[in-house]
Length: 118
Image (cartoon, rainbow, N blue to C red; front, side, top):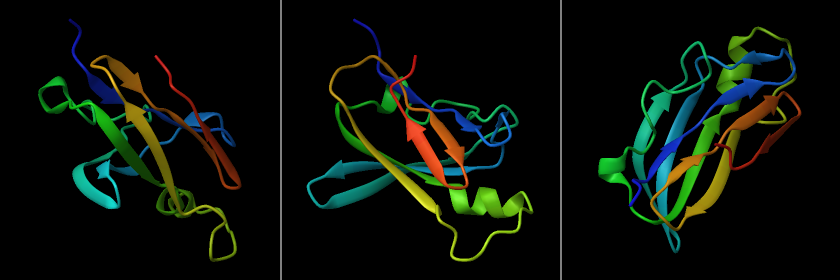
């Protein structure tokens, strides 16, 4: 039986570079309840140094990642009108079985996409 865990990767599609310094929070969602279980910041490769949810903490269920895109975009020094078009980017997803889940974020100042990666 495989072990479940969660990783992510943030890429800035407007520069073609990894997005370093993005704060990410992970929540467990149950009905209307959100419980924060982790907070990390991306490294120079746009990844977290450790899994957001390691095998020892994995439980099947619904989760939400919140990417603090606005703070990252402001840190680049690019002049944009406030409020930013994108600030906090929530991504809600389910992890029904214990396996590796990878939820990357492709980010630009005016759009984003995500998918289940490998």
